[in-house]
Image (cartoon, rainbow over all chains, first blue to last red; front, side):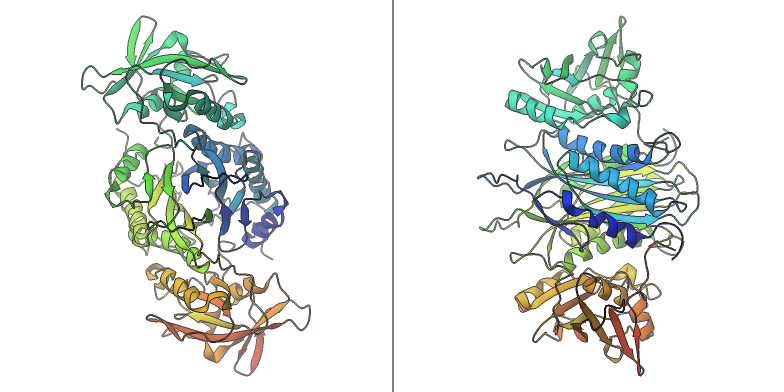
Length: 314
Length: 314
């Protein structure tokens, strides 16, 4: 046997641990493809053939730093940030697929730890890991690259897009913002799947638009209005900042994976244990200027639509 | 603006080209997730909630060499090899998602060329590109890494697994084998989607098992019997070798992306323009030895179950 990771060995060992698979998994990992049932296990009568699909990467050096973070933490984060997108659409997870390109110096055990962490995070959120691909860097300096695809189903009333905010809507956020990297929140958060389902159940069609905060409050709020003639005005003093962090961090740091949403009418102040805070309002845009997200803070109004962290572009 | 690839710019420009999207795409790229209808566009009455899902990587230096291959060719190959897995299960493509980690020195145009090639290959096979993620290497020596997820639906009679061959079945292969890399076949092949659908329509439940040849005939045949008490005996003289290549290449080179299948009874000699050749037979294993795939060639019988190329492990 050669040294290093054996693709077949690792994939075989991942496949052998099938016992925790969801009953929706008809063919698990190991065949050419997996086969799943997309409908809820209880078999709702109004069968639905709509699917939610998305993919995100996690790259060592960009989205985590493996000098400071364990493989378990990296694997968990890779899956949870993709599942956060299902929460942002108020969907329900169905399945997860992962691929990893791992460093040349890794052994099988390290690959197993990574895949098991991803499998465990996926199972925890009822999105069983049904597919995986593993390759090994030829280049000895190559760092871990993961790609995670999530499959979900929308709620019966449809998916909640990021684009449908209305003038007069309040802007709300779950949890606390800021310092996600330094506080290790970006490794420890749970995707807000239950909260977004509760929110949709309570608000119904008053929940107009939703996104999860990954790039940062400023930038993600700007994504919500970029296709509209709306602007958002955020009240700095109302932003729920994580302990030890200021408004500047809450607006620009990113990686909070909290829900940011537009709704009309009354909105609950909490979803279970999770606080919900009104932090601003959507208005008609006054000019055709580029200032779509305004922060009202310390007697100044500043444009924060590009305050967030643009992933990977530096 | 910084130099190099801008994730947002490229993703926006990819999203702008939505006009070629399939009517099954309810929400295209650009929102938190895409939303698709999984059922066939004509809306069959027996609605089916089963999905086929798989993921594969394409890494520069492992699966292509960008010193010798264009970005168009690399993007096309990345998508076609994932779609080949849908052909191997006799499924129908529904959607494609791609992620790419691109070299630091790339500009937006290079990223666009890659994504457009992937989108075009996906559209060509009725598997619209509905999701994408783009990141840029920090390390200046980092090479292109793509991950492609495919979503499909099984035929009404179910997916054709790789594992259900029966003693007495013939082993058949489509097209020609060998020298896929040197002949550039690995860049130019079309996934055998139409052929596998025809095969299933003609053979019905006599089509017992199927796989696509990626690792090589020897190794992929061994995948078909690894969970059984069967062995395969391949008749070397019957293997359809690509012009200029010998049986050794046909058995071990890999990347042919032809269908390799087990069937009982009569099998057609062609599917449209694509030849089908009987190259061997499945038998009960005589001993518990590891020799599951035997090649009968030039008066010798040799084990070729590990003859194929193990991707990425060198």
